[in-house]
Length: 200
Image (cartoon, rainbow, N blue to C red; front, side):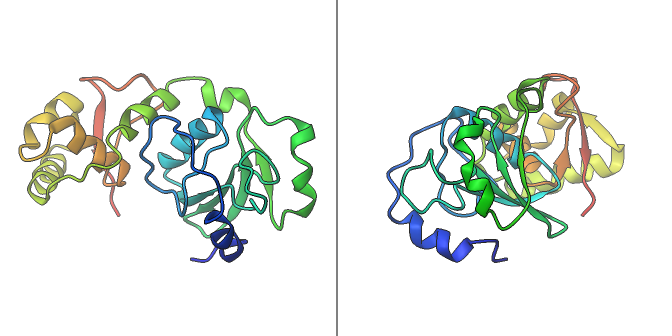
């Protein structure tokens, strides 16, 4: 899917300076170059990666000057229903959003509470530490079969089904790939966290 300003952004990204490292480093749904303005923008990227309504997102989508902190919102977000909008982290000041006048689509800035209140961001950060992992076919089949038979399992109970991959990494990879789900808002992920299968 070619998103708003996608082709122009591709041409510009080759000229952008090297990205600073904001943690966690792996991303799951980022389409194109990873270029975060600061840690606040990285935090929003974490939330986008665990949002089941998000298909993909681009960093710095309108960056034409090579300066990652100027002239562009932090993200262009594409949803699974085909809708898309520009999105900014909560730290962006009004004086830094003059680009809004030339945006070819909807714009929104997240509030501080939307990003930092509750457990979702920390859980997303924890999962994305395993963003580069892939679960083996055998482990995936064993865990999905166990969930089919039981309806749901605790995270601790799921560990026994993961035999070929590192257990936590394997489960995290399946969560990030959208095959299984956990409640990221109720509490920090732990042994008692309920795991369910997502029906595609």
